[in-house]
Image (cartoon, rainbow, N blue to C red; front, side, top):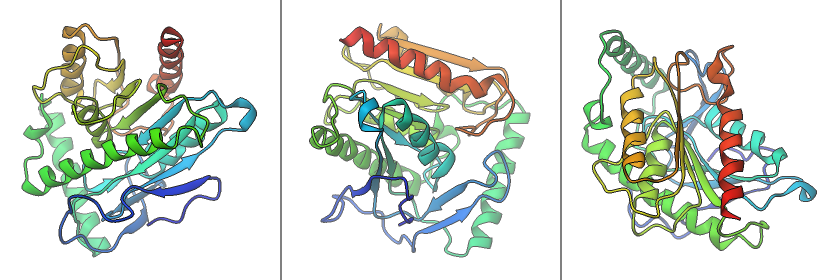
Length: 296
């Protein structure tokens, strides 16, 4: 488990007695600096088997009673811990939001770091080649279809449901309104929060913001589905998947907002690139304030 950041209020285990399902053969957890790419210099975590929520609280005087579960991405193999996780929480907390960064379980990866990074670089190169060839899938299963991915995605959904339960159970302790708890997720984390929002077993959330990811997989969008905000770049290989998610929410006549930036690539999170896509945070806050005001 990564050491809790000094500015975090606490770390909560999701399953103190162990999760209901296990991903087998997961080596020891590894936290490492990202060597290259859009997230270079940030921190990733892999081989997670003990899921947690890391809590960032606002100054007491500025708390607005809204809880946001932050779910980093990483292709169900890594967790983009800083630029899609704790950096998001550090942005939200001073604005009055209580943020809970979810470190969910992942499929196993090579314990040898050099071998893992070589394989990851090869995967990235393959995705870049597919994008350059104009291959933009309409479902994530067109890119990933292994049994280990399916196992990890199911475990992640369990962790997402449990995270919502825990935050709601602790709402009074964190001075939250139980009806003002939502989720924001990135890439694989975006798929996770949509899976949770569409799962009839899950407790309902007030809003979801799947950033550059998420799909319904043909499941019906219910009449009480939460308001949805999504953002993606046109040069992201997942752009058509996000378009489909927006279309599904719109077809169900549920509140939704989509922003497609011309440039930004995949995985920008809180990284500033000097592009209009850097402003997704402002757009999200304006949308969230409007959604919360409508519910009062």
